[in-house]
Length: 179
Image (cartoon, rainbow, N blue to C red; front, top):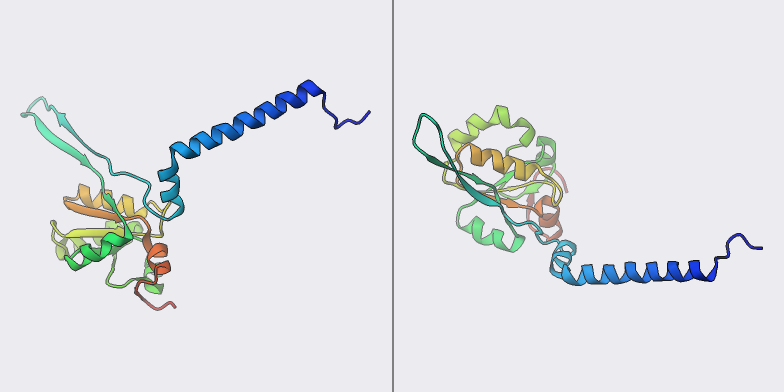
């Protein structure tokens, strides 16, 4: 008797399980088609979260605080933002910035923010539109830097999630010492 042969009832159960998995995958893909298409075409798949809450303090009047997070922007939106005077900020480390960066970007590495923040605040107006990028989708540095700058009082903070890789792959101008 062959040890790999299955009884007819076990084969039927296995076949039904495979059919159920395939059907589940088809339904899941069809319901999330736009999200999946955006993810594979390099578009943003996240949505900004903006929430406001009222905080009551015992010794003071009620005050309103807003938890505001950086808003994602796409590559095709950057031209309008840059022509309107937005400032590109590279949140990657200094070595990556010196090797290659988006043309016109300044360096403000998240890892060196504590040392650089005071100078940055002196040089960049609090109401300046800031577009922060890092090493593409999955890199949290731009979001973390954006959230920190918002907490420091900056009001117009955007995140370019495609970052350096998407910009480079689109053939956009680069600056720095690398090729």
